Length: 198
Image (cartoon, rainbow, N blue to C red; front, side, top):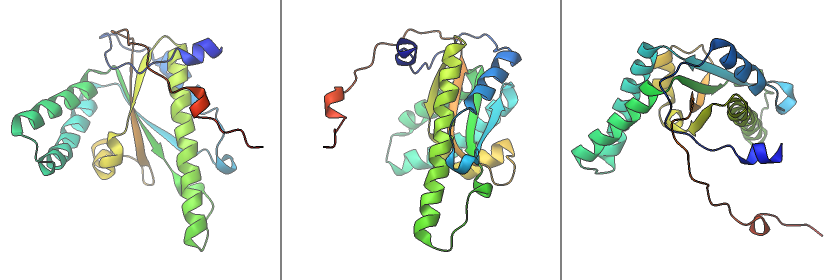
């Protein structure tokens, strides 16, 4: 099991093969079997398998992305290349899942300190579901990659997908059968990451 967990890699290129609905259902159900603050289970999943919603999402995100890149003083040709790459990644992925947070059932506090901590707990809970989703996809022989684009344009994502009220986009995953073999990633030495408290 440890070798399986360590063998997951970010996959960005997929075969043009649809993912069976039963496989996708198993992945999403397994993704929800993670701990959450107060067991409120604030994760939500917007699933795109049809072409038109993916194109709509890609096009609307591209408009926001173009504005941001122009603000970075990039050349028009570079901006166009990045936008095309972004749109194609969304369009060509067999499955796109936008991971959202619904914090409506989290505890409410009168002070900012605890309110902020409660929101962080909700975000951490949703992130745990995101990792579980990737591991479940890996268990099904699928590749996936975690992207953070929705954090830069949450309202655009809500509009493009007509998300229910209270759903806050947190991440976007691409899933499919791998069409690449990624290189092994370099890991930081565990000795530099662990502090044993005496």
